[in-house]
Length: 86
Image (tube, rainbow, N blue to C red; front, side, top):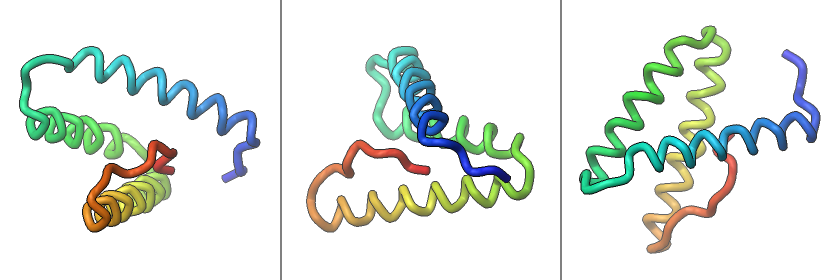
């Protein structure tokens, strides 16, 4: 698999950020953060299962990296930095 260029990475990040904002706007409301998080996990799972085995492995690594950020933030008493998770 070819490595994306910096421009492609920037375009990917911009598109993903825009979609993330749209998803957040769609689910804003009185729901518990736990319900929202579970729904997003389900969307993540449904999406990942559409990928090739190699891409599933890449998604697993990105998810593990994000989990590490959350664990570090928990230990440090603060939210993780707003940065790419891939």
